[in-house]
Image 1 (cartoon, rainbow, N blue to C red):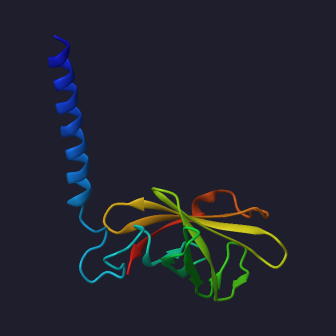
Image 2: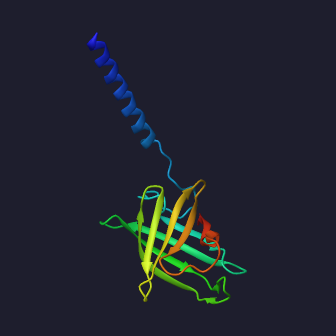
Image 3: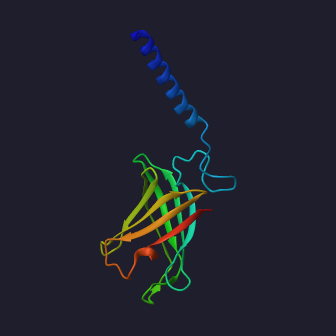
Length: 157
């Protein structure tokens, strides 16, 4: 009686392992034809993401470029934003910064500090069809009545 159970367990384990390997081997790349992510991408997030923060009347254009992974498992990341107005009417100057991002499974974290030591972050969350949800956060003071203007969706360029 025990040999039959052992054989059943071995067959079940073999089928499970084979199914998992088949899923991984047959997985399609995260990007479609004409997209920016390289075919040997180590992360879903690698590539160029574009969108607009819903700030002010016209919004602020943004581009996030996630490059290659280094030996510390961090990705060279560039965050670029266009000129605009914030909710209080102040001017937002266009700019760009280079930092490191970290792939954390179904999210990607980008962090940096300004000259005054205030910490900022943008977290990207996977969405279907080459889209991500971007959430902007800061350890500094929050201006506004709700945080919805700190969220947007980006598409792969």
